Image: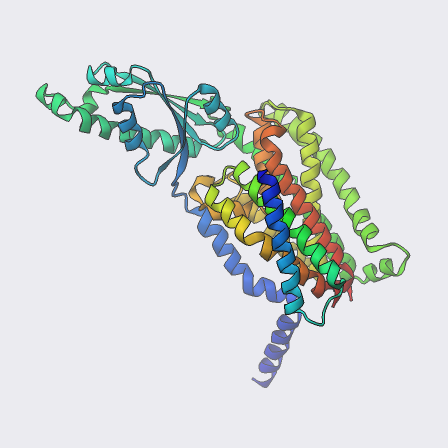
Length: 375
Length: 89
C-alpha cells in the first residue's frame, strides 16, 4: 500500500508539474465534449433564406410570413432582383432562395398550380434539403389555411390538388453528388498534416536536448522558427498542386475557380497552420503531448467544425464564429468556394484576413515564448 | 467617415487599456509606458477593424459584430499586454 501511495504521489506531482499533461488531463474531455455536442447534434435550425417576390401582393406577403414564422428558416433578405439573390448565394450568406412568380396570388386563388422556385446552395446540401422540406410543409399549411373554405366547398383537399408546384434547383453542385462537396473540404483537412509534423519536430528536438544545442549557435530564435517552417511549407505547397490534380483525375471533381487563387490562398493557410504547429511545439514538452494537442486543435475541429461532415447550420452562431479562429474552418470555406461556385477574392477576403490574423498571432506568441519555454 | 469614427473609438479604447495596464501591473512595465500604450492602441484598432468588417462579411449577424466591437478590442489588448509580461517574466 505504501508503495502504491508513493507511486500515486509521484504521478500526481508529475501531472501538476508538467503543464502540458495537466492541460491534456484536465481540459481535453471538456473540449471534446464541446466539439462533439455542438457538431454531432445535426438538429438544423435557423437556415438563412432570401425571398424574391415578383408578385408583391397581400397573399405573397402572407405566404412569406408563414414560411419564415418558426425557428427553422430565417429571412436573411427580401431582394428585388435576381442578381442580388445570385450574389447572396455566391457569398454563402443564404443556403436557399425562394422565388415567387408574378401571378402567384391569381394562380393560387384559381387553383392553377402556382410554380414556386426554390434555389438551394449545393455546397451544403443538408441545409438546402432542410429548407426545401420546410418550405413545402409550410406551403401546404398556407394553402390549407388560405383556401380551406374554398376547397371544402368543392370537397377537395390541398394535398390532392397540389396548388403549389415547387421546383427545386441546386446551384454550384447541380447533381448534388456528395463527393463534389466532400473532396474540396477534405483537401482543407489533409493539407493541415504538415502542422502536425512541425509540432512533433520541435517537441522531438526539445525532448532529445538538440534544441538547446541549436540555441547555443548564433542562429536567432526567429531564424530558427522560420527555418523550421520553410521545408514543411514547401512540402505543403507541393501537395497544394498534387491534391487538386488527384481530385480532378481520380474523382472527376472540377476546379471551377482560379487555380492561381487557390494556390496563393493555400500558401496563406499553410503559413497559418504551420505557425499553429510551431506554437504547439513550443508549448508541449514531449512528442506525445504535442501529438495529442495537434489532434485536438487541428484534426478534431477539421472533422467537426468545418461543415464538411456536419452542417454548420446545426451549430449556434457563436460556435461557428469561434470555429473561424482555427485555420481549418476559413480554409474549408475557401477550398469549397473556389472548387464549386468559383468565387473570387471579392467574396473570400474575410477568410483570408482571418488566416493572416491567425498566422501573425500564432507566430508572434510562438516567438515570444520560444526561449522562455526552452528554459 | 464610418471608418474614421471606428478608428477614433478604438484609439480611445487603446488609451484606456494602456492606462488600466498601469493600474493592474504598477511596477511591471517590461516595454515601458509608451510601449504599453502603443501595443494597446495598435491591438485595439486592429481587432476592432477585424470585428467590424470581417464578421459581417462572413455572414454573421450584426448582433455578433457589435458584441465583438464592444468587447474584443479591450479584452484582446489587455490579453496581449499580459502575454508580453508573462513571456518577459
